[in-house]
Length: 455
Ligand SMILES: Nc1ncnc2c1ncn2[C@@H]1O[C@H](COP(=O)(O)OP(=O)(O)OP(=O)(O)O)[C@@H](O)[C@H]1O
Image 1: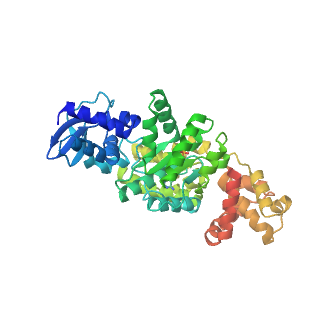
Image 2: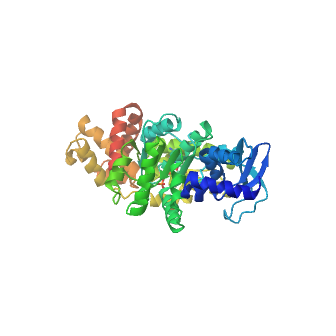
Image 3: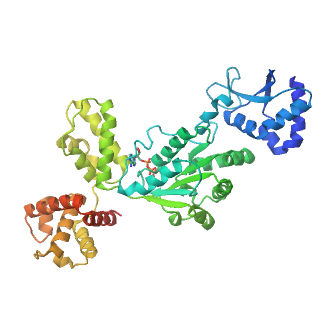
């Protein structure tokens, strides 16, 4: 087959596939060779090769055969050189698009962002605050029939939304390499959309996003107030849901709390499963730190950590996991630089600024008010001398929280609890530390109080 003949066949295809499809998918094909009944074409991207093969392969074979050239199939090849611009890419080395179809999940031809190799289910520590979100993510990562669509994950900064989304993508990719899994931030979605508008390339944009099997959009709150992007997102969303394709969305708040998003989009986003990642609790933070220490031990072999340091960090840095991880990394780097083990003293020196910044501005008085409200007792009874259990236990809880959530020393806390001695405060704190592992009611009370104080 000559290039001229291909030119004629192409014209025939224009009539059968339609003007837009022709411009997007057929016209860019460059005939390369015909051998053994296989017609090979050059295509600019793997994605395009796969798409044309899947959607127009049979028609192309049909038209070529009709023109008197016996072919049994078509193949598409992509230059194998690092991409700068799709247009001026050298066309020397080639690879077959079919042979790389399994890369499609993260192939840069697809509109997604790269996945972080550290963000897998293996490295995700599960605790009470994130167990529901984790279970839902696991379920979606199993693939198969779409049970809830979309999965909407939300939670505060640095609580693991992106980590979970990447973990889902990795898992799906492992289980079904051919699945087109696209992960990107809402900002990237908007950027692509605006670019397509500018380049008058909307059809390709729509086709690209509507051809994915799993679409994950991170930080969707970003599209609030951006009407045209929202509109396009809505259409993409509907088109994918109609085809039973899985959608996963993350946001820093619940769908109804995102101002500036149209009601119909909010209601669409709520129509599947909405789960939140709660602020971390002490146990989860400690678990994450322990896991991180294991990971860092290869990077810093032989580095020793004194007892109590991780517990101290888990208590004191409760802002978010990212800050916690950063602090540990810095601590390790510092300790290995000065050739010392990680002691409490070194920790306080090295992380003075982080510890100061994460000092919550919670006051002992605030804690006392919350605790007395929570247990429905009078503030005067919480602080006063009565020793009956109804007052004594809430008092110990309040002392414990004061120790955890403020920078006040034991004597200072004692003074604010009706002039009690620091040993009484210490006893109260220890008692609660002990009880919170044995008594789930106390653990729940503490969690609720902590959350409402930190909110
Ligand atoms: N449960 C967890 N187990 C292990 N690592 C975690 C966990 N939660 C968060 N992390 C780690 O904390 C860091 C921040 O997490 P991630 O980027 O997923 O947060 P996010 O919720 O997407 O935050 P943002 O709102 O800023 O986008 C990452 O390094 C992530 O691996």
